[in-house]
Length: 363
Image (cartoon, rainbow, N blue to C red):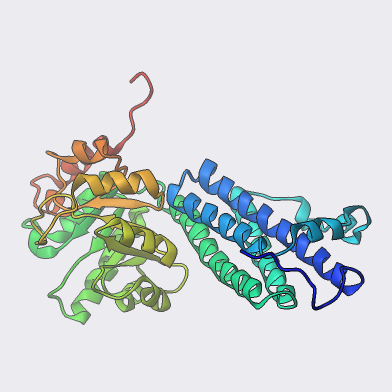
């Protein structure tokens, strides 16, 4: 790229020097903020996907800053006489959690890129445009970082997710749900395609009572409107149903939105779209759904290596193959027929959870 000099605006004195001083300070804030966020994604979240995005944003910022004359930026810097270095607020001096650090750094990046965009208009439309794009990218990465942080905390104890369809439960869906909850299932999804809306609302409200008593998560499949009516914790959508964005508009910010993913691009998109968890599969042929292709264990491995948003491996998982899924890196699974069709739903739930529980060192 060609570096830009303020030839048309005159020498770097007076207002021109002030302009470059402002640009230099904002560039430093943006670089620092992105590095703080990248360090969180890399060392705390251990999230390769978000780390790569943040690293890319840092490189995009550096590339755009090459449009400016770096010698002019340095020459106009005057930290010793900067009145702002001694102006601090009590809020700036404390952080209560890693999430607070992330939130503050996201705002720092957004504010800095806004300054660079506005003052950059005096230098170059190309530079100002690049800063505008970075600012919008900053909003997206803030959403992804904080949603991932909060979802991991909210679903931390949720390892086994049971998808219940009444016709798959010979002994009755109610007894299956209550047995699974008593044995430690962390989430129940109501997955009914053939009930009327009135029947589904009535059923969902009963499931809400059972899950609330057990301290478990209750999710409605496909129907965000009925998720709200039955006071569900959230809704799950597929790639052919409502988007995460549209589901969120209905259920609001406090409810969970989960989405099925069948490849890595869909999983990455779900993170940026603000999903609270993803379904990863189908891993194996399933008794509940038919697919032309199966993602297999390789997809589970890829997601585990790259994404830390809560991810539930799904599709044909039962006691006979869950060890393979865990070996591929899965720490959470979603099952249906394995528990719905079991003679002893509680026992199968315990067996699956035992496979998902990390072994103690030396155990």
